[in-house]
Length: 274
Image (spheres, helix red, strand yellow):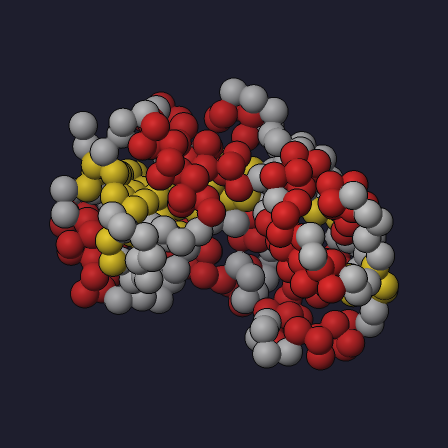
């Protein structure tokens, strides 16, 4: 059976996919820029010198969207005999300013490079990851209100386990590949609603405070670069009070309804407890 390369080995989706492949006895190698567990190989998607060893004997790749050396990766993959690439992209590529948007540009550039290549390409475009809520963990554990510039902004939180299952599906069944899928959670929820659900999971109410854009930017300075912070704020502003659209792509790939945010909150409740 052909070997699969799973990049981004320190990420929850890559690790979830690796676990699913291992359970099914599918030969694969887990790769990371900073291998942190036995059996993980070194593959830095910004360093072409690490590509040949990682791609040797590989026929399919689960690829994170790093654009820095994507042309070199495509060439090395084609030379190595890779036939299929499953890209973890983002629904942000639908934004009108995607090419100039810090949240979308890398995903779009990698999509374009792959689609222009001889490699068979499948695009997985999640909307908002449920795990984005982990950004609130410090405030919740310290007992401080979570600061939200747009409490009424909607998103479509998708569980990382569902994305891993979707990747497994398109890697296992060739008939599902060579197309794009937009992956969403089962409901569109405001940030305030997500905090209420998290409060139920940890057993206590979670307070939040509405803050200005400038205050939020000053609080994340040093953690989120200015252009990314501005892009996030614009994205939240655009969905303030406006539910986002949902798709059935996850259910078609996995055979079950997407996991709820309640399920994600229960799975990760310890991350929010003091």
